[in-house]
Image (tube, rainbow, N blue to C red; front, side):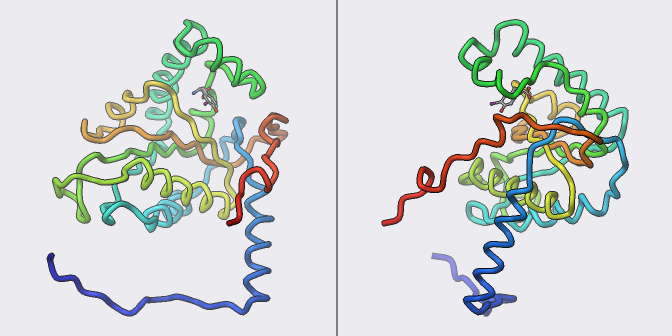
Length: 225
Ligand code: IYR
């Protein structure tokens, strides 16, 4: 075993039980207002806001603290246009050329989605999230990473919550396959495109599918032992 150093837990804050009840309820009320949006305004959003949200994502727990993620922040209209063109190509194969299969298309029908993805150009920011198969606690290391999907999934959750907290709408977009993002974002082969996150203001009059508002009752998602 290698020696390890510890430091006293920094920054922990204990709340009274009353405060805890209020904070838990307030967070619930706030996160309940988050909805995935597919109609975005082209109103600009300052880059520093998105960058702070990515900093928040970067604090997520990860396997062996290797932080196996990379966030490619895309604001350039030319790059967004490229992403849209390549994503729509893949989505065309998915929706219109049989790649999805009947069961998948049937599951998506209540969302009303199709191969057209104008928001990839309209929204001010796209964040291509990459999962690193190899890396380490410092950039440039070549060690094996662990629990990569779990770690990047948690970081993505932090990012979505941070963007919502900042007042921005998000969409998790996953064209299949997504490896064109490696090429466009100049990311190496040992990184796998995980999710393409769209972030910005919702378009005026934006709507969401009724299907997306159906949330499982608490009793169905929890077992208390
Ligand atoms: N990537 C496609 C299809 C799609 C798949 C799932 I699973 C969704 O929850 C939503 C869409 C698209 O973005 O249209």
